[in-house]
Length: 429
Image (cartoon, rainbow, N blue to C red; front, side, top):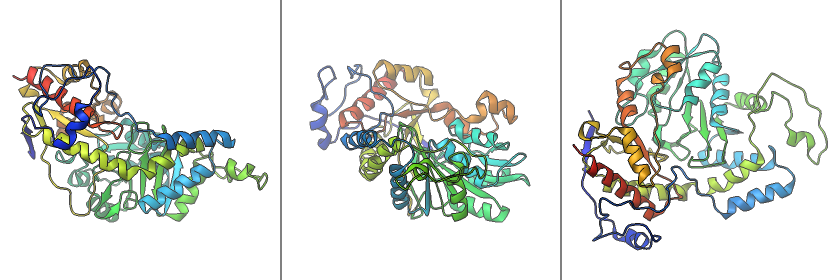
């Protein structure tokens, strides 16, 4: 099926031992380069998804407060310019969430009542919710179990005369396979609105995600690779659409507050079309400026932690993880999440029990995600049931996300590894 069990304890690399051995009192020691089973390792809870906030961000926020301009203004514009330069996008439009960016992308795509948008069930609710808000119907296609991304062959099966757009998600930070989706879009007159909430640093076939699809939405939520606490960005190469979306993000008025009340004096405005309160604030853009400037550094740190997890969990009984197939040439994984999948047949506890056992060992986790077609609203609204999308369901039933953040230390990562091994050893059939 493209999956395999992975197993035995791995020796802690030498370059990690100095940091690990210096951990705070109350944490268990490394013995012979290995973490012993049967111990609660941490004296403090390891929060899942904790962001790395440094003094540059704090100083920028303070400077923003002191400037007297905390709404959308010069720092938001600067963040847009720098994000466009980072991704290579022609336009970057800052908004207050990835949800807002997805909604605006659907509007630009002309999605409306009676239309269908094909998307993945393996995502956060916002991806499908915005389709419903436009009066359209989300149509779920199954995923590739190896990548957890939309399977283009399954997408092709779902296209009907009512299909207006395809909304892939770059799951975990791995780029979705966009070329076959773009080919489908060209052949059927569709728009690609891709959800890159996990994928700020991702690259697809040598092109940064955000420059491949027609409209791409990014998230800067608190636990994302780049955070503004709450915020998002929409990128596009469409000049006319970008002009319209900049107006729509702030009530559909012709001039934003920065332009109306700047030192140049008040400029009258008018409502061009009914818009939304979707604008980003300078107060949050202040965080984003420095987060973006450290994006590559933070990615290298997460890659280091991923490599350590991969090494430690090789051949671990009780875990099913995807065969680590190399990325296609020219692709780069953003590594927003590190999931493991439980081999439930090999364990005496279920996923909830596994999560609770890690919590008892002071390790926080996440679930990404319970497949959307299994949620009550979409189960009833779309007429789906268990068994309709088996690949997504297989992942959905077993997945657990382990901590992966640049705020972690090497000692934190070793604590996660030891806790996972401890729980699995205690609950093996």
